[in-house]
Image (cartoon, rainbow, N blue to C red; front, top):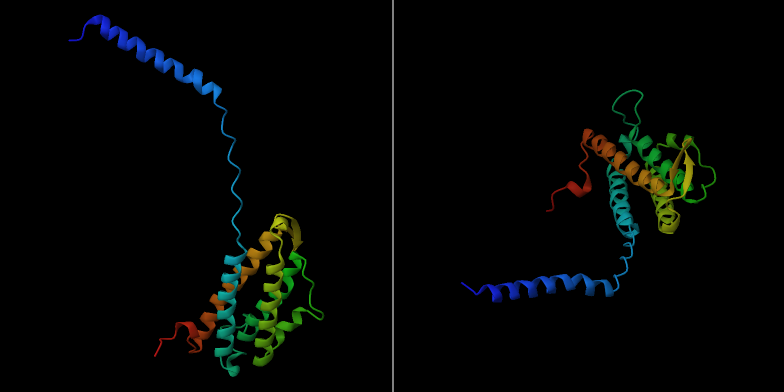
Length: 191
């Protein structure tokens, strides 16, 4: 067993050393708080998702035979052409919440178009219109409020509505196509 005087001396030295740590720490300046992380740049992933869903919409619209464009699953439900024209109308209208100008002559009457070539062309034009608006959206303004459909939403909400709307109607278009024996082109087995 160590001698009490040595033991007490070692213990006293350890206590003094521990007591001195806060004294020296007070002289050390505190590190500045970390700057908040920049929000992630969501434009690139948004546009990739937009291109994927709209590419599928166009591919499916092109795969459905023209004679099926008037098909509807039940009375009072949109036909194949009306689904694609509804999507086109939204793609033209919604970007107005991002500051994009509405194309001239845009009306709900466009949903009555049944000619496959005109429907596919309108769908493609609307997709390009909405993509251009998304590309030009300034991240600094995405929190700004706009009014669409009689309610307030942010410009970021407008982008999300555009994307979710396209996904929603892609699902509908897939169901319509499969009901008519059309397999989505991206689902076909490779030879």
